[in-house]
Length: 268
Image (cartoon, rainbow, N blue to C red; front, side):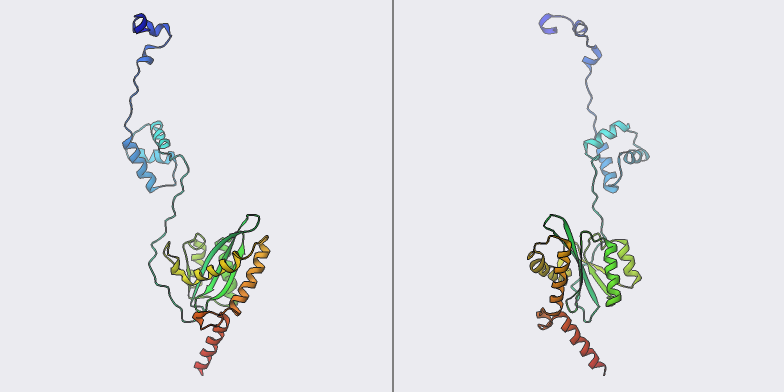
């Protein structure tokens, strides 16, 4: 209107009913770099806190930014989306695979996962004596939390005794306070392998490979009872009839009996 009809700026605004202050307003872009850096420092150190905790922490640090400005930057950084913080693990010292010299010196424990025909996931808890490669227990169920691991170990405590050391990976069931407290109570050293180094638990990794090839990949399971029955059959064959090259082609149970008899002869 100003260029085509030659009217003044005031008249043009009046004709279209637009306040002159609105038409003349020029938005000022705020520099948010300092807000971004402050929020990123807080979130890096406290990944689980929300917006208001961030805002009041900034206030305590002396920043007087308006909460609306902080929230705008907060959402721009997508910090309002729930974050999964990585669970921090203590440093795991690199250790060579310890080779036990007697029964119940070292047990290894690990989990495996598979699915039934209907798609439901199930898990296996495998426990092996590293000395004679004997499968001590395989527990199978849809869920196996830390308390279930302790229950299996309590059963083995009554039937076989407990080891001096248990070797595990860094799974959530193994780093739980319940298992750590149970091992301390029973004077068992709980040894963790380094993350991403499965061969530091090589004995049970080899067992897992055999279970995967000969059992889980070989059969289709419709129910959990079928899994348990097949696992029981497989463990019986593995412990009593399967020859192991490292055991001079004896089965785990036969090798254990030979070692027991040898120890008795030496005591005479």
